[in-house]
Amino acid sequence: MCPADVGILNAVSFNREKIRPANAELIYRHRLEQTETDRVARTLSAWSITSNATIALLTALWGFLASIIGPRAAIATAGVLLLATPLLLPRSGGASRHERKPAGAAQDTPQLAAAQS
Image 1 (cartoon, rainbow, N blue to C red):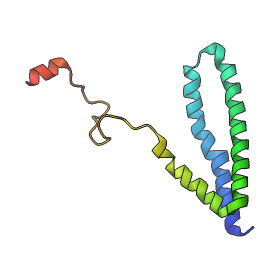
Image 2 (image 1 turned 135 degrees about the vertical axis):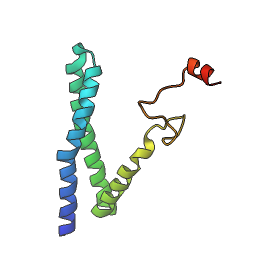
Image 3 (image 1 turned 30 degrees about the horizontal axis):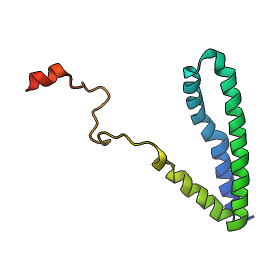
Image 4 (image 1 turned 90 degrees about the vertical axis):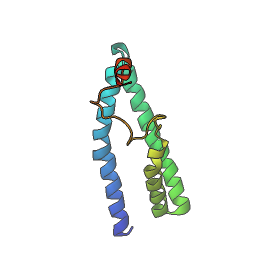
């Protein structure tokens, strides 16, 4: 293994161990606040099981891919797929991001519309 490969593995490991859990805590907290109190233990168990199963499956899949196309190409493919994930997010059907009103702006009400005309 060359030094560049070791550097890539260190960067991936750092992201997996340090950065991702910090963001996940915010998501988990929000979802748990929305969950009924009698289902919290069941929800946490389901998250743990699916998280571990997903990690195992993707590790095996990417190991198989790396054995076919090589480790660098497999890591590059993963990087491209990660960069493409924002395209999967739902888009708002209304105004574009630049046309939206700020959060604190007053909304047009029927009274305001009648007064302006």
